[in-house]
Length: 281
Ligand code: C2E
Ligand code: CA
Ligand code: CA
Ligand code: CA
Image: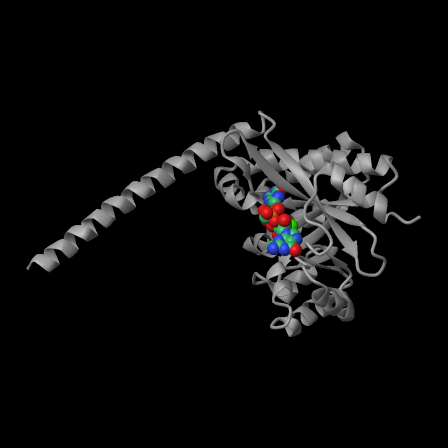
């Protein structure tokens, strides 16, 4: 039957096409991975900083450092397109050390300039597993001279729960050195309340997915804020984009917020202009 034969043929073609695409994808991956290894040495990585706003005072107590990659031929690559790759290949450990050093140096400069803000740095699961993490953090603090209290490490709930016992031990060591800990993307993973109490953390960052669908998730947001408050933690809302969300978060007693309503991640000069405008007279 001709029709059947054609269908089979088309199927075969699609399969060949699919294999070809997979081949390109694998090749691109390898290329990107090798580019990423040299990105650090070629100074193609840089940090942008997103202000975190106090709902009570409107001031900027902190900023989150976010990684960007200026690729020589592909242009600006967002972290969503390379962090996972950096994790899988392990190169995130070196990149993460660079992020810590750069962010601490920047925060020390802001402190010197009379605009003390806490710097928040993302730490991935792979970095948390690395036995050298506490040493890397200590070295970034020592080199920059930054007060450890001005450094906050953001660790996702999922990374913490992969091996909760060992994560708790690492967090205790980090806390003992004076740095702060925030649980990132809070509410998206499976964390048991028993563990949450055992983790020596200072802040909870409520994930953007809840804030962006503020209406549907209202009871959940209320619960997360309440949970943070009852544990004596600072609560921070991610991805605040409009006034309605801001009003509701204020009512619920959420402490801080971060999002396009206030500012996107900014280059250093732009953040400094914003700090000058927002600093108390
Ligand atoms: P994250 O830690 O949850 O960071 C917040 C992300 O939300 C950032 O995306 C930020 O630009 C974005 N964002 C902030 N406000 C808004 C808003 O109002 N609306 C929307 N739609 N988005 C908003 P970005 O910079 O693309 O980073 C994505 C993720 O990449 C981060 O998610 C973090 O998991 C990872 N990442 C970024 N920098 C680093 C780093 O230095 N180290 C590690 N390990 N991961 C990093
Ligand atoms: Ca984060
Ligand atoms: Ca987050
Ligand atoms: Ca998030």
